[in-house]
Each structure stands twice: as C-alpha cells, then as structure tokens.
Length: 505
Ligand SMILES: NC(=O)C1=CN([C@@H]2O[C@H](COP(=O)(O)OP(=O)(O)OC[C@H]3O[C@@H](n4cnc5c(N)ncnc54)[C@H](OP(=O)(O)O)[C@@H]3O)[C@@H](O)[C@H]2O)[C@@H](O)CC1
Ligand SMILES: Nc1ncnc2c1ncn2[C@@H]1O[C@H](COP(=O)(O)OP(=O)(O)O)[C@@H](O)[C@H]1O
Ligand SMILES: [K+]
Image 1 (cartoon, helix red, strand yellow):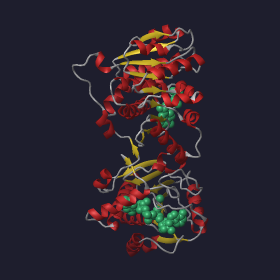
Image 2 (cartoon, helix red, strand yellow):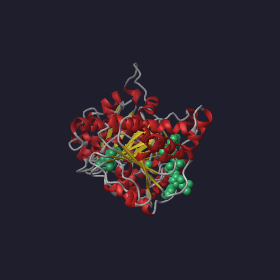
Image 3 (spheres, helix red, strand yellow):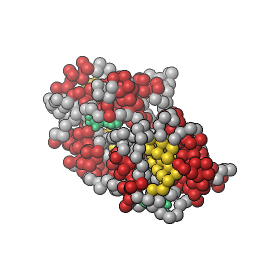
C-alpha cells in the first residue's frame, strides 16, 4: 500500500472529483458516512456523542457525522471552534445541512470556557484539523485540545482522518495534539502514524476506504509504502515439486561466541525453517557440541579459536555458498574484525549483516564501502545510530536511512514497531506485523536467520527483506496470540514460522 503525502492526498481528492461523477461535497458525505458507520458498529446510541469541528474540511466531515448519527437516533452535541472567521465551502454547506433539522444541537466554541461538561459514557469525536494542518495550534484552540486530552481516562477519543495538531508527513514538534484512542483515517496510512515520536497520538488506526480514483493511486509514485499481504503474494514462490536440497541453496551462518551460542542456534533454526536447502554454521570451538546437539539439521564448521570466530573468511574459498548471514552473538574481537575484513574482500554477493557485525563496522567505518551491493543490514535504532550517527528526530532519521541505502546500494532494515526497510532505489517500506512480545532477546537473531534462509533460496534481496520481515512479525503475532506477549520468547517466533507461511501470505 502506498503512503501518500498530504499534498498527494489533496491531488487524489481533486483527481477523483475531476474523473468521477462525484463532487467534493459528495466525497465528504462518503468519507463521513464511513466514519458514522464505523461508530455505529462500535457504539450504541446510549453513548452521547460530542463532536468538535474545525472550519476546514475535517470540520465538514464532523458536521456530516453529526447529522448522520442524529438521523439514526444518537444524542449529539456539535461544537464549532471559531478560531477563524472564514470556513471552507464544504464546511459551510454541511453546517447549513445540519442546522436545517438539528440547529439546537450546534454551538460555537470561542474560548476554553465553552468546553462542555461531558456526561458519563460520552464519546469525543475530534474533527478539528486533518491533513490541512499547516502550523502549530495556538491560544485557546490549543487549550481545547488540552481539555480533550484531559478526558482521556474517562472518555473514548476518536479522531477523524488525523489526530488534530499532527502533521501528516512528519514528526510532531508541537505540544497541542489530540491523543486519540482511535483514528479513522481515509484511504491511506499517513507517514505520521508510523513514526515512534508520534506514538502518543493516533491510537489504533483504522483505514476507511473512500473510493479515491484507482488510476491516481497506481500512476502516482510514492516514496513510502506499507507492506501488506498483496505484496507478499507477488513475492512468495511455492516450492518446485521436482526440487532437491540443492535447489534451495547452501547458506553459511557465521555466529556465536563463548556465552552467546544461543544467538547462533536461534539464527540457524530460523534459517532452516525459512526453507534453506542446506545450512553450515561457522562457530568457535566451544560452540561445536552445542550447535550439533541443538540443531541436527545444520552442519558445523569450527573455528581455530576456542571462544570466538576469527577465521571464517577461509570458508568462502572452499564452498559455493548461496548466501551468508553474519553477526548474531559474534562478539567484536580484533581477530573477528580482521576475518570480517577478509570476508568482505572476497565475497561479492549480497549478504545479511547483523548485530556484532554491524558493531564492527561502526568501529571500522572503512568496511562500509566494502559491503557487497544488495546486502541487507538489520540494525535496531541504537546500532543504526552507532553506524550512521544521531538524528534530530524520526523524520530526519528516515531521510538518513534512505540516503545511506541509496548511496551504499544496500537494504537497511531499521527495526522497531513499524520496521522501516530502506531500498537502494530510495523507496522505504514500513512493516506492520509484529508486536511488543518480540521485544525480547534473540528476536533479531531469528530475523537474520530468516533473511539468510530466503536469500539462499534465490529470493532477490528486495523480496527477501519484504517477505522475511513480514513473516518474522506475523510469526511473532501468532506466538503472542497463543502464548501472550509476555510469555512468548524468540524461540516461539521460530515455532510459529510455519503457520506464518501458511496463513500470512
Ligand atoms: N483527502 C480526501 O480524500 C478527503 C478529505 N476530506 C477531509 O478533508 C480534510 C482536509 O481538509 P482541509 O484541507 O480543509 O484541511 P483541515 O485539516 O480541515 O484544516 C484546514 C483549515 O485549518 C486552518 N489551519 C491549519 N492549521 C491551523 C492551525 N494550526 N491553527 C489554526 N488554523 C489552522 C487552515 O487555515 P489556513 O492554513 O488556510 O490559514 C484551514 O482553514 C481531511 O483531513 C479530511 O478530513 C474529506 O472530507 C473528503 C475526502
Ligand atoms: N514493539 C514491537 N513491535 C513490533 N516488533 C517488535 C517490537 N519490538 C521488537 N520487535 C521486533 O523484534 C526484533 C528485535 O530485534 P533486536 O533488537 O535486534 O533483538 P535481539 O538483538 O535481542 O535479537 C526486531 O525485528 C523488531 O522489529
Ligand atoms: K481530526
């Protein structure tokens, strides 16, 4: 799914009106109708509804919602914030339509003293500002937003399209922003919903399709995308009935050190469960028995070093590996750094680089330029900062992420709630599977294994990152649904990977 900017959404709106027999007022009826239907599905008329409307089209939506709910027997009070003498044409039209039958339910808000006393069970609808937010909210209008937020413990707050005060395309820098429980957003995710800094505002986001013109959507390029099942269906390739183990590649995993063999085991298991044909794991001597006993399906190469991997570069001279994954539990010994440097000089195909291998690059930044094109880096935010330096805010970090992926011609997976996958062509995909149950040691090692397993099966690096991150989160969601977010561990993500293949694509 494409993520459009506020300006593009306005264009989509105008394109739809120009190419379909629908007016802007009609589109507003459709959009607000979707919101009213959602509200009626979730809340009965025992809940009095308090709608706060602005003077733009977001306010217009609120006025239509008011009329539709009143038509269906709800008790509604609609306050119009008079922060400006002028209103949009459609807002005026919808105000007239509401006043025609229900004028006694509408009142003006010109100061915080006009904020109503809310009865128990009341629902707050925020239709003050939407994608037209152009500057910080000030004065008493900001005061009304704070008063709305003060009700958060007692009343459900539902924002129409956007939480008022939030800019659609960037990190929030302002103080007056509605903190909604739910946001009913039209047609598209907004970039703002996916940024960590904006976590307090949108609540649970529901995307309501309003029939914006499909030609605009397909023809207009977008920099940001949201991964979805449709994308996965175009990527996933069922196994060839005549396949043999050679068909799906021989993967090499370089992982583990004394005290951190668990990371290597998790990656190895995930790599196999992601479908690799063969897997060899390069481990230090102390890890040989551990790996052989824990994962009988993996072959094992032991390092000359008893505790660390320091001679793995020699492996690539012998065998024709299809994919290499390096990093989980690797440690950052000088010998490991040297071997990594040799490996990067000799290996030209895409590889997966994670954890301590990323930390080694942070310490020896000249290695960055040696990463083979098409490789996949999987930093969490701290590792990203060590690699590429700090950023002023989430939007700036997103720009830096994309810039680095383009200039190094690699894929960078910045892990988090909405993992951001930056591609060498400048596109960024956000992933929406996964949950806080995955915030537990080893989850990232599992991802590295999955990605290595997909690469070894000849998925292109782009296909591997999109599918791998999606399946990893999907398996995490299945694990959480069966075990709880608290009790699930990284091992459970691997256990549910099979179901994720079956149900998540
Ligand atoms: N996209 C779609 O497909 C559809 C979209 N629809 C709806 O339209 C919404 C967008 O409407 P919109 O463009 O009229 O903008 P909106 O957010 O209502 O506010 C603009 C007004 O606020 C003002 N203003 C701005 N910032 C301010 C501030 N800080 N403090 C004070 N004033 C401020 C601004 O003034 P100006 O900047 O011009 O001075 C202007 O008057 C969208 O979110 C969705 O709900 C649906 O109806 C139909 C389908
Ligand atoms: N709140 C969350 N929502 C979704 N995914 C999460 C969440 N917390 C963690 N994850 C996922 O779990 C993984 C954690 O990776 P990482 O921090 O490298 O863990 P580790 O180093 O312990 O293996 C990432 O893929 C991340 O996207
Ligand atoms: K709003």
